[in-house]
Length: 92
Image (cartoon, rainbow, N blue to C red):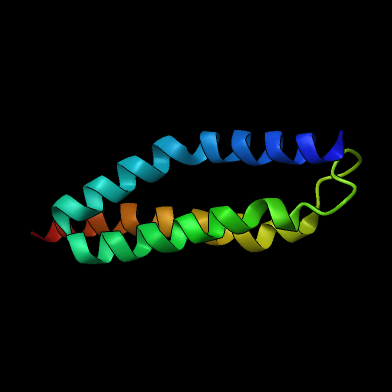
């Protein structure tokens, strides 16, 4: 069933990114800014919610390139939060 496969892919992909996201968000909230962490976390969650809709109707055949419009910004949010933590910790 393509719809079930779409759901499975969305859950698996979100699960793969859960640990890096949660660790980076909590570290960012503790070291940099809790308010900014909430905003970035909210943006991340909204992007993850869009992911299943971008998979397209033929998910069983090929990875849709459209998911890159969600995946790369999510990676960017995680990288931004981790990078900001490192910079803040390094510079005081």
